[in-house]
Image 1 (cartoon, one colour):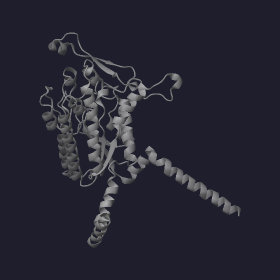
Image 2 (tube, helix red, strand yellow):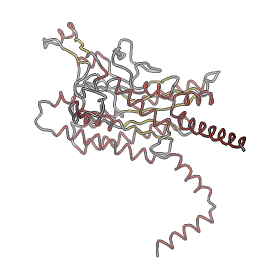
Image 3 (tube, helix red, strand yellow):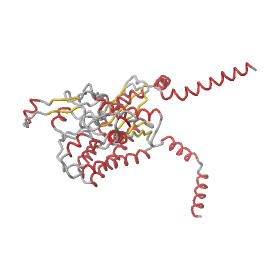
Length: 398
């Protein structure tokens, strides 16, 4: 009897340990590492986008020498790098593009990478932007296909790769669409989002199967320090209302397309809610006696890095004297690194959020369920389909 009791205790402990490990391990990095070792595949991230995604290291058609973006040691990572750390990826194939530092310092009206250059140029043809068109999504996807095609021609094939795609555009588009008429801006957004999913279909066909895609939402650009600097003297708040409306409309179209997309799994990152929550948390932050927890950022309005221009207004003297850079003491306390970009800590949080979605398989479009439904429908014999349709028609008429 004692022997049976001891066996029961041992079995109960073993079951408890197994259940505990089954609950804890999947949320740890060790589990991710175990998955990598078991599958024997290489994990990589392929990133498309603007300067918010650009790692500064290019696999093909990078900027000419001397025009590469300069990463400040204190600026921290961009979100694909944080995502890579979260899912323990082996490499990042970067196709995102940024404006050269020589341009951003002296020409603040120059536009960064947008989702579709043709759509953007047609929509903003009446505005005098500095002409420095970067590679849009279509050109970035072409570079990816060209590079992947070259790999398939190698005599020795590379190891099997597990690939995660990231696409984040919108901040440059919406920033400037807020200056347009409402119907023109909405038309441009419709065309741009359509273009995004056409490019995803191209990637899906090239990869010969369902793909994994991370799509962060557009943020409220009115929180950007540069937006506030441009509109600080404006009494009319039309542009601010337009920017908020266009960001909301962009996300509405993005969600609508993502929900119905059948080319793979879509992970939709709530980057808009992240920025909004950080700004509101600071606004509602009470005195020390009622604080429940520390804020992620103590400063959500001013950038850590600022540029100080010479007093002379002559352009030649500006080029000679140069622009002085001032950097805050603790970049981790700032939501923004400069007047147009998030800080490294903010990028880390977004990358971690995206990583959790991928590890938990939290797809927005319920791709697996849709595929199963289609498979079940296709497996139904024709005679049974006719019976079902007749039955449905009879019930609907009653």
